[in-house]
Length: 218
Length: 218
DNA sequence: GGGACTTTGTGAACGGAGGAACAAGCCCGT
DNA sequence: ACGGGCTTGTTCCTCCGTTCACAAAGTCCC
Image (cartoon, rainbow over all chains, first blue to last red; front, side, top):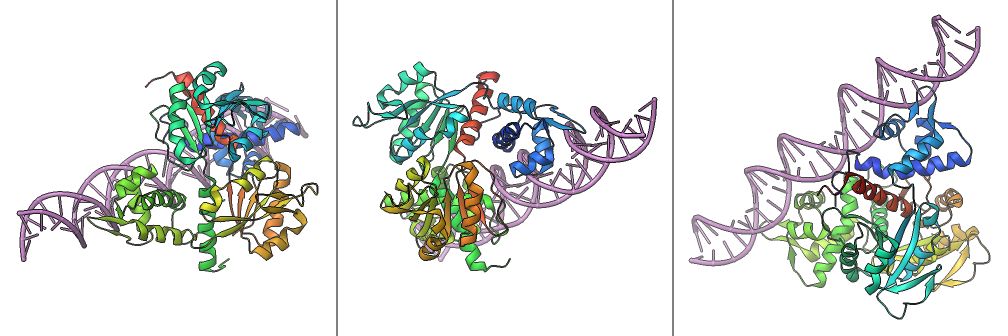
């Protein structure tokens, strides 16, 4: 599961960069010129020292006594995350979740363009969702090539997920976001992130149950 | 963010329990009587020693030389996760994502029942999604009481998320799954988990970009 | 019944991440 | 020019989580 050594940036730091990015965008919208690590930490819901250490991995982007220049830091983090350009994505699986993802506006705002939609069901092929025509799974490879896609989103039922992942990888996709509740096995060099909604809920129930059993000791 | 000490189970272990649960369900479907930590580890995509240590936190559920009894372990993990009964949930925000979540069948299969749907837009109130009528946000508290809901799902636009969270907590909800890309501030004793789809994609692009820059050193 | 084999449960080493604290550096007012 | 006040960058320490390795314990076969 480990995406191997990407450089020398801790994985935990990478996971926080998008959160900083979002906070900085809010600051930029308010026309704030600079921000302190403390303020940024508060907005991101983390510790101030952590913010400074995270940012220091990329160089000295701040000014002592002043803080960080919002625009400059925005640019640097965008660059680190590879968000200087939009990323075309393909979503495979046009069920409830796939359709919702296709319609979800939050992607384009943050640098991701749904370039292609794919389903294995020929009955769905040809219909248009969010302005994009649904193609058949068989055409995945040519779509990936044509749109230069490197990110694939799997929104299929569980049994189909591994097969779709294999086809994505064969087509040249190197980053996969998997919504199917299965553990994908992929070769070295392919990044996979998994989002399992039921797992999140089950983690919540664990703590909920514990609170009930232990009693409200607060 | 830390849900405080729930007992003495490491948070990382809790997060893996649902994964084990899913693997065990697959094993049960195949009528496998027992499973070794090694096999289970492979299915869950983790280390065998980790599986054993995780499970040992709850007692000795295995038999040396044999492995773990699938049915028994299933029962124990379900019990630990509080999945001996179904959990009624309320989804707030009937946009694309909220509707998709309401229609998503994967919840009910895993112990979660969508008991109520809520939106702030009166134009949406009264319509039926996935067999559940949409109520107005003002009725949240009475819905929570009536259906004995302890889990709330936030699928609103970002600006509304904190207010909804506050209302949920005031109504007695203690566990929140947040899809809005904002950091919620909640009092002690409330569990929050956040799912931010764009963040996941941005993490992928980081590694994608790094691979491109570093070159395929594999 | 006993020995060989298998697998769990756990003690200990190891590595990474988090947080406190402080020195270095920058700005501003006088 | 210079001192006071901030804020960063970094060091050090601690803690949590992972992994190895092995003893304990059970099964199976002869």
